[in-house]
Image 1 (tube, helix red, strand yellow):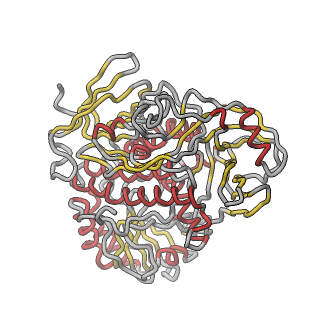
Image 2 (spheres, rainbow, N blue to C red; image 1 turned 90 degrees about the horizontal axis):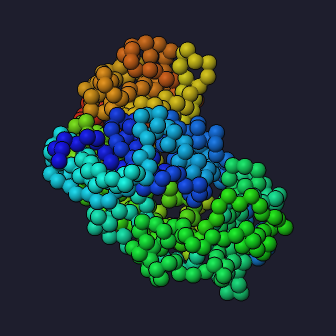
Image 3 (cartoon, rainbow, N blue to C red; image 1 turned 120 degrees about the horizontal axis):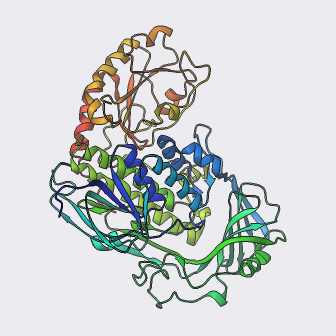
Length: 585
C-alpha cells in the first residue's frame, strides 16, 4: 500500500454539488478526483431553480455568464385555487443585488459545470463507484498538518469492473440521499417522509401564461385541505415547463421492497430513505394531460415530453457534517421538500464553504481545526432550510411572520450568514452595517481613471480564488500604509498559485477623496473610487475601514484601518484554531 496520497481530495458523486466542490478545489490549486457510479449524465430536470446567491458564488468562479446565457429568468409565480387566481408573486429584489432568480434543468447545470471543470484539467471518472473507505492517522481538528501521514484509503470499482485502492488526504461525499459515505461514517439521518407521491415531467404546454412565471394551481376541499395540485416551473425553450403533480391512483404504490425501502433502482434501495426519483412507474403523457385539464387556468395541451418519473419527498439532516478527514455535502447531509428551490443551492454553498477551507489546510496556511468550522457554519443553515421548507410544504408561505421583502431575500439565500459562527470576528462600525460572517454585498459605481465605465465589486473580485482585502477611506497615505501592513498576511491568504505571495488588496477611495489620493498606493494595489457612494452606503463605511472578504463571499473581518495588522493577525489565528461555535440546536 502506498504511504503517500496520490491526490489531495476524492469526491464521490458528480451532481451539481460534487462538480462545484471539484471546481472550487481546482480553482484553489488543490488536486482532486471526481468519481460517479453512473455511466453518463442523467437527462432529468430535477433541480431547476438557481438562486441569486448561487449566481454570486459562480461569478467568483467565472461561471455566472455561461449559466445566464443558458438559463431563463424566473419573474414570479401565479397562484390559483379552485380555478380562481388568488395571488401573483413578483420575484423582485433590491436593485443592488446583481442577479435575479433563474431556472435551468439540472442536466444543463451539470453540463456547464463539467465543461468548466474539464477546462481546469479534471474530468469525471464515470462508471466508478466508491465501495468503502477507512481513515488512518490524524484528522480534522487534531493538530496535524497536511503533510502528516494521515489520510483516507478508498476502495473503488472502476468502469472496467476492476478494483482500485486510492489514498487521499480527504474524502467528500456528495453522493446523494442514499450516500455511501454518510452510511460508512455512521452519521445519523433523522427525519421522516411525506405520505404523498408525486409525478415529475418535462413537457411543452400551449397555454398563454406570461413568460418567466411559474404556476401553482390547487384544488381545495371544504375544509381547506389540498387534494389536487399542479406546479409548473418554466424551462429554456418555448412553452417548456417542469411540471409536478400528485400521483393518480393507478400509479400509486409503495416502492419495490415495500414500506421503508429506498428509491427503486438506486444504490440505497432498502435504506429507509424515501426520497428522489423512482423506477418502475413511469407516468405517460395522458397522466400529465389529465391533471392539466383539471387545474390549468385555461385550456391547454401538453406535448413533447422528454422524461417523466414518480418521486417521493423526505426531510432529514445528519447529526454532523463530517468525521475526521471525511465530509458530506448536499443531499448526503440534508434533504427536504423542493419548496423554494433550496436544495441544490444549499448544497453548492456547502461545497464552496468546505473547499476553500480544505485548500488553506492543505497548503498549511491554516490548521486542520479550521475544518471543524464547516459543520459549525453549515449545519445550522441546513437545519433552518429543512425546517423552513417542511413548514412551507405543509402550511404554505403565507404564514411567514416576516415582511415579504425579508421572505424573498431569504428564499434567494441572500440572508445566509455565519455571524454566530466560530470564524466571525468582533463587530465594528454602525449597528446596521454588514458584520463579520455576513454576506459581503455587491455594489456598483466603482471607477478607475482609465475606464470610461463603472465596475461592480463582483467585477473587481472575480477570478482570484483567495481572500480579498478592501481598504476604504479618503486619505491616500492611510490607505497606502494599511496596504503595506496587509502584505504580512499575503502568503497565508493569497491562494493564487505559485509566485502569488500577496493577498488581493483593493483600495476603495471615498467619493470625497481628493483626485491625487490614489497616487501613493503601491503599484499592485488598484485604487477604485466609490463614485456613486454605493460602497459606503451598503457597507456602512462611515470612516477609514478595512473589510476582509472570504473566498466564499462572506466578510471575514471588519476593522478600523489603523488596526489592519492586529485585525489580520487575529483573523489568521482564528483560522488556525477557531473557537468553538454555538452548541447544536
